[in-house]
Length: 341
Ligand code: ZN
Image (cartoon, rainbow, N blue to C red; front, side, top):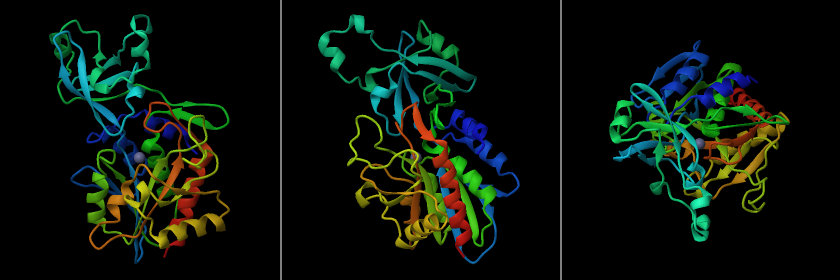
């Protein structure tokens, strides 16, 4: 387990459509294998020979913001790229990625001293928020290099907690990217293995669609993170996934409107986990979906499945995961890659 690489991946900034920083890290980690970058920016790494093609996909992009408007006083209004719970945005420090370089700012809010009783109970929508970079007027913002359309990300470092827990931003899906790197390095495939680091997953599974079209694999597995129900505020019947209990193997996601895992791929994952004594959790998801949803509808169809790393507080800047789950996800996928002929 190379925690330094996980840290570098999570501290890199890559909003949908601007995945270069993450792609560079993955490309250099996997420098010894055949690589190509397709027209949308997906990184495709190939290893091994065989009659069948297996595609593993992890997305490089994280949810982010974008400069939408700069007002006369120099406050910046923004839009969201990907699914946010607006409350997680308040009082965050952010980085605006301009042509001239990074500009730091904060998402300000009214202090409790000035709030009326009813105001304190209200959810603030992102449309009513703004970024303060210390400007006094619109011209100051422009002089700093900020333009309409600049990408914005959370300014948040990766840290280790106790008991092998870790926290940071963009675990969704840099943990998947890390797993992808390790599986490519460790596995000796009997198939033609494609590791794809995809673009623009958070805004509509776009990179998965074009890369799957190019490769047209016989099987595909998306590697992502998934929500858990092991902390206050989530009932066990809402999510029975827990940290430290191993990767999840998806049966369906988004109530079947996303992916219904192909029985062959799902059974291969379960069999491998049992043979190798790797803990795993079965998941019936009602909410989000993954790259596998786009991949499995390629051409005549691609039998697909999903393996996920349990993660708390997904789509916030303080996601939490456990190192042993990442380790077990790598073991499971190495096992699957080596079993498939
Ligand atoms: Zn994801």
